[in-house]
Amino acid sequence: MIKNTLLKATEAGAKELVRFFNGDFKITNKEGINNPVTEADHASEKAIFEVIKNDFPDHFILSEEAGEIIMDSSYKWIIDPIDGTINFANGIPICCISIGLEHNGKIIMGAVYNPLMNEFFIAEKGAGATLNDKRITVSNKTAVVNSCLVTGFPYTYLDAPNGPLQVFEKLIRKGVPVRRLGSAAIDLCWVACGRFDGFYEHKLQAWDSSAGFLMVEEAGGKVTDFAGQYYSVYQPHILASNGKIHDELLGIINGQGL
Image (tube, rainbow, N blue to C red; front, top):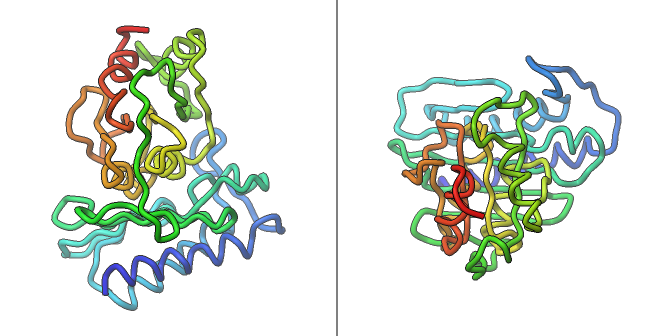
């Protein structure tokens, strides 16, 4: 039943995304520059909450807009009602609903749905990952120089060694194609299905990656933090890859190689 709830909740949020897309809606700004929230974000979040609370009223919820709804439960729903809000607000169809389900501190299930491109990704711990019900796997590239990568930049620049701009510059100066789509959840899913060979980002929140990172792992890829350690959605750094270029890309991010 819990997987069915995940699918229903994701679809409910997606209906709101479609309803508002390219229409007239209110936009407000959260703290910081270029950090908008739209009327559609709130509508999607409300629709998702209604499904989850109807089926599992005692479950913990963590959502980008509402924050934490704390309950004494071993289950936690981690929700981004619209990932890629700036894309959405500008009529760019690279945006999605992303929901991860955590049980006893581990992500066990995830769904990422972009209804504008008709792409519904689902992952279940130990059971693989699918795109529109077809099994997906990561790519087979073995060298970073031959890879197609994707990243994202924080809107507040991180002035630290080997920061986002330095890593990006190092890669593109060597001719490595690095894309920036504006939706971390989609970036991760596109690594999972082999369109990209690797994704890295310096500053993500749990709702950005909770579903997508499981997608990569279940498609045969590898996900770590920038120290090469076990990835937790509650820390900011992420490197996700097909596994074959992981160590090389990790070295580049940390100032070695290329």
